[in-house]
Length: 355
Image 1: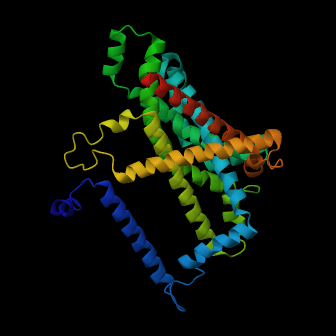
Image 2 (image 1 turned 180 degrees about the vertical axis):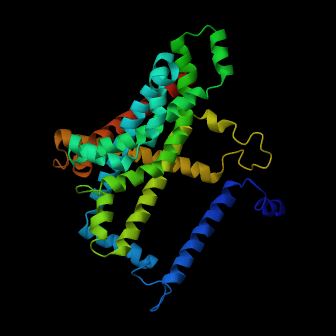
Image 3 (image 1 turned 30 degrees about the vertical axis):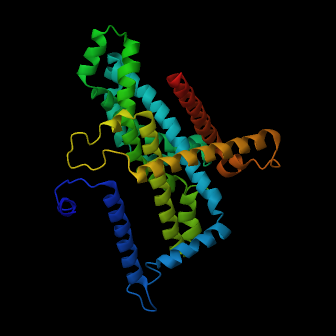
């Protein structure tokens, strides 16, 4: 216990999962406690028009659901976010590998790829409106472009960071260029790119709030018009907290995908760190993995039911996915079809392993 206490003040010292969780809970309680103290009583330190109390903020979710169609607007923003990610990730990986691996295209376009990062994204909205109008198509392409100009140079950089020792090994074994790409470049680049995508998650919500202020629908629209124009600062804080929660969930989701697709990144983590106390799975990690697994199967089951309804009207043709996500429904289908394919592939791999 004394060693744990000393480790709390050690420069870059490590914490076990239980201590880390406990400190996170205590930190959150301290933050909320200060918030309550600043807004408590008939004459609070900060006026409710400046900083509403946490009780006002959380009670405003009822008004958002009743008056502002909150769940539909959440779905529109999440669909917009995911559609931008899917398009941007696909394009950045394909074009990044072409530019990063082939000297001809590197010479032609690398300087352009590096320069495109400095495009002020908000200044391009007029161009996207002229090209695509103010509907969901424009917003999706705007999101995809914003994520793309960040990820494309990163893909090229990750290709340059692949260690020569791996390349020399596969060349020694007689690997072709295609085998080198599939066995070395793709696993190495994608395993690192997931971390870059997680970093981009927070930035992408800034893009969403901005672009959804154009037209109608989404959390950005509610923040810009539905809450501010009503003078409901409590709704503004409630929506900001909601975006934070969605962003945290999205980050954890990417982390879960990272662990499933690239388990080698976590197998030896802490192996040479003698202060680490997480060398074996804790009860908390087992519970979290179980919850993710249960969530995945529940989500797939609900998706299957909604697809049956859209095809055969088993629920009365509610068309829930199209009702919630509208023009970005395609990305929901893409993600779930990909998840189903991955699940079947995992089950077949386990079956072959034990045969």
